[in-house]
Image (tube, rainbow, N blue to C red):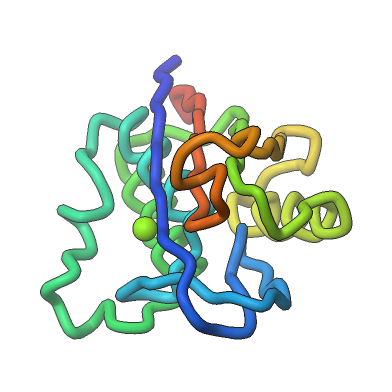
Length: 158
Ligand code: MG
């Protein structure tokens, strides 16, 4: 068994929605990002890469590479999964915590879990999503951005 942790944060900017966990969510803001800015999938990819001992997404998909401009994070996640499978590893479960004052996640939780389970080729019961506010503290608490922690467990594929 191998465990990995991932963290990502994106600042809110002018826009009309966010990609979160592979789901487009309408919102009165967007996020500043080179790719589609899916901060949930970015943290998840770093957790998976961390568990596999494969570094981080910045090494695999550099900001400086035009191929990844406006990249769909779901496609990048598929690439990460292939790298994990190439190490003869498979995902056991993932646990994701979103920290943001807005948007409210309750109405989107089911769709986000389904999306992540599908991307990871996992049963939905192996994908957990939690959301919390930052209790008004600091930049996250002032609603200036969104942060995500993710943990992933991998096992030998046998
Ligand atoms: Mg990111």
